[in-house]
Image (cartoon, rainbow, N blue to C red):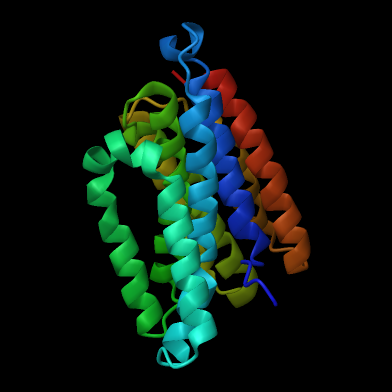
Length: 240
């Protein structure tokens, strides 16, 4: 029996980075200092989110086969039920504050249904869901919904969508979009009183669109992974 695990390793890198960014930011709060017991909620929550991420592949396959192949439907139901069950400790208090984000789930499902999985809006929607992990895990640590942290993590990793577009399309249009996105991220960080030093890894994006050196997508993936690690360290150093 083949388990339909998501093999888009970039997605897992964003997911894990979002978890670590939440832990880094959460470690700076008074709740952490007072020894607030969060492990009994955070662990199952992270596991539940991982299971829900895995529901994406069987859902896409079920849609493509018009729900006629039982295997895809059963795997989708399994990941959803198991994921939601693991999320129960979080949902008891978090379902209210996070209910608005169900819009992201619905919109992504609609894009999948319409066969627009690789549309740029679908990819940004997917990143919005992956980075939602950060405020969810932060909530399990502090009991607070941090839209500021969500914006910080999404704006950083959202740049990766445009980075890949620049590498695959190699057009002047996407090079300009990448540059403008980085500028917008800096502006929004400043408005939200988030240290722009956290965005330091995005300087590589600007350098890459200026030089446009030939590079394999695998190399781009490793570069984005390194930038993600630096981002987490910077969150731990400059988050306030």
